[in-house]
Amino acid sequence: MRAINVSGLTKRFGRVTAVNRISFYVEEGEVFGLLGPNGAGKTTTINMLATLINPTSGHAEVAGAVIGRDNYKVRKRIGIVFQDPTLDNKLTGRENLHLHAMLYGLKRGIIKERIRKVLKLIELEGKADMLVGNYSGGMKRRLEIARGLMHKPRVLFLDEPTLGLDAQTRRRIWEYIKSLKQEGMLSVILTTHYMEEADYLADRVAIIDNGKIVAIDTPANLKKSLGGDIIQLYIRGSEKSYRGLIHKINDRIKVKKTDLRLARTQTGEDELLITVEGGNDKVPLIISMAEREGVRVVSLDIHTPSLEDVFLHFTGRNIREDGADGYERNREFIKRMRR
Amino acid sequence: MINLTAVYVLWLRETKRFLRSKSRVVGSLAMPLMFLLFLGLGFRGMAVPGVSGGTGYLDFLLPGILGMSVIFTSMIAGISVLWDREFGFLKEIMVAPVDRTSIILGRIAGGCTTAIIQAASIMVIAAFTGFHLGGVLSIIYESAFIIAIAVAFIGLGLIFASQMSDIQGFNLIINLVIFPLFFLSGALFPISNLPGWLRVFSYLDPLTYGIDGLRGVMTNSSMMAAGADMLVLIAFAAVIVVTGAYLFEKSNVV
Image (cartoon, rainbow over all chains, first blue to last red; front, side, top):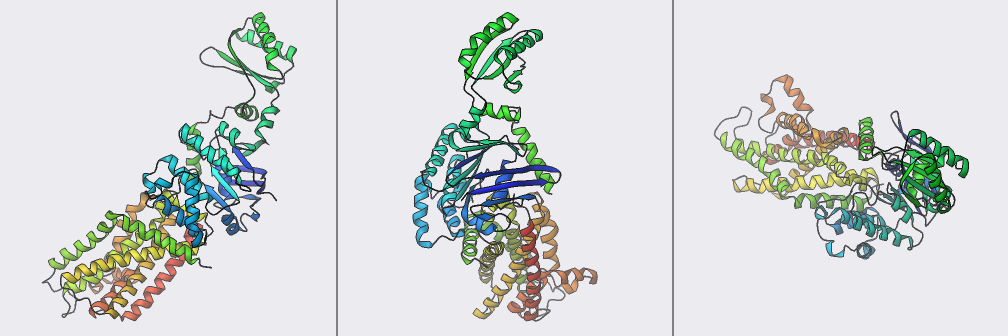
């Protein structure tokens, strides 16, 4: 049985379609990544699957229960770590865990033991009796992960689990998430806009953009789907010379239109991206063609495609282009729509 | 079905939060005590029209001040849902497998507890100034009124909380809702002194019956019989809480 099964799920806020007929599934024991820029609809998707908001249309089954119809069952079987902290700052870490355990109906006899176990997992035993208000951002996130696991959920939702954390803390949280996988049948669905995070943690990744899923596969397959290597050239030259070079490359190497991308920069050094099979062998040819067309190659780089390249390929833009700005705008907008 | 464990643990949370916040404990006592002290002493010798001869103004005032402390605490307990939303904790409660009724009962239980703690503190302090506390039975009756007032106004707080999107409007509520309800209730003077058109609003104010009932129990001088006050108060509380619960259920969590 699948942990999550989603078909045609849609959420509209007024005239804005935040999530547009998405469909996917998550296998039992799988770590599934929802990858997309801020404002793509990841959190809205999570909120629907966690029964916090009702979908406008579509169907979803989580841990064997249908959202909207069996919300109580869904809630009992999932754990969730939201993007923003949801802890009570006036209670200690231990009290927060205890409150959670009681809300989820754990038996008194096992609560103590369970708290001890999850505290150990996230290495917060020493700070458990401190007020959460005095915790650092990383400690709060770890405590929330622990809390999400206390009632042994079948599906764990992690919404941007490392957002705003420093590199070291992020690493640690990644290790916790990895270690969960070895625990058995727990399925994890995580949203992120960090490519490395999805690549490192997820068994399969769905790329979501503007409320739509544009690709789903394993990170390896997604990267492979671009075909071969990415040659990145930093070049200088005239408009005419660029056109000549691109024409030549099309002619001699036979690359698809979408696999050849020229990006202008302000520095005068422009960027040419070529996705091609056996990149190493093609480089000498490309350089000699460039020389003949009068294009100066300033530097070059060859790499196998990263998820970053995959994202660029499917959405036509860089994931980092929509910074916090776009995200804040979107959130503000959605907030306003609800008033 | 009501989940008693959830009610208990949410009650525990509210109570712990209250007791840990020293400023809330002190602050919630300071204002009622100042009212009691300055008004009580200031008007001590004066004959307030409508206050029957045997009862001094201080005796008349004390039930009103108790009502005042309860209305402030319980409205804030209801509105504090907004803080939980602001700080995210509301989501933790709302994704838990707990029905909304239990969540509201937990909050009501917590708010009633803080109201009782405050009222008891005021009574003890009043006892030092010479107020006669009365027997066990009258303390039970007084507690019943305090709880009934608290329930009604926690419900009212919930209604406001579910209609507000952030905590900005909080001061407005205090000034434009709590204070008028307090003044209309006859806490400081007999409402028979108010002009007729204004008195209509007094009769629509649940606190009026709460304070009249407390007065009946504590000083034996009230407009209505305490039992009748209690019935009206319970009717108000029931309507308000059901409305509050309904609106809370409908409000956005995220």
